Length: 229
Ligand code: C5P
Image (tube, rainbow, N blue to C red; front, side):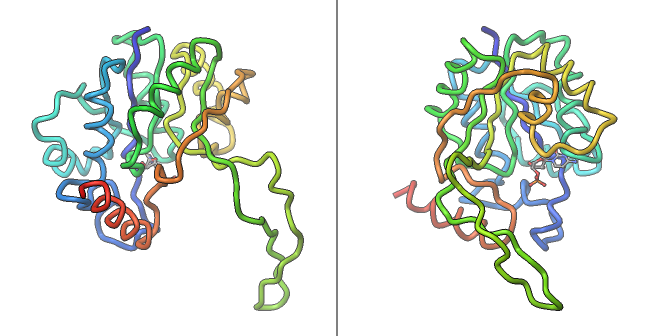
């Protein structure tokens, strides 16, 4: 099958508290964004990589990807799901069979996980990389200014969704068009499920975390230097 990786990098990253979105911050001598692009680009089963960007940050994008052979970027939208939809619409001319959607803010995606995701799509509409929840989960209950442990949520059977999330291209595009005017969905598996697609879980790795807060960038730097040893 023809597989294209669609990397969403159009977010503002406001939780990072930096003046630059997290995907353009430096990590191990390159930008956060570039790490996943190199991994997808050198993967033998991926035929093309397209990034969805915030068009007002095109200069940052251009310097982040210098020298990489990518499809031209496209502009994203207000919400993550709008960015994904714009990316999917832009791929019509490429006519991929499968599309893998990945967060630019997950630099530690590895080739084996990409392989497992593509393999899973041989038999299923969708494939979602996820890890089992290991912590005990609490529902917070506000009382005055204090927060209390209101209830313990059974973690049995719960997974944390990561990316990539892979799908057959045409049904996913249709699902995103259908969901466009509805309530916000924070991942593509939710969009796909709402359209009746069945999404299989693919076991991911804890290292494939999303850089969201400053502490995540420190963790990423540590992991990066361990990997380079
Ligand atoms: O904000 P969050 O961490 O959930 O974003 C996940 C990914 O989606 C990031 O790589 C971010 O750049 C991207 N995104 C986007 N367009 C938006 C919001 C987020 O491409 N409007």
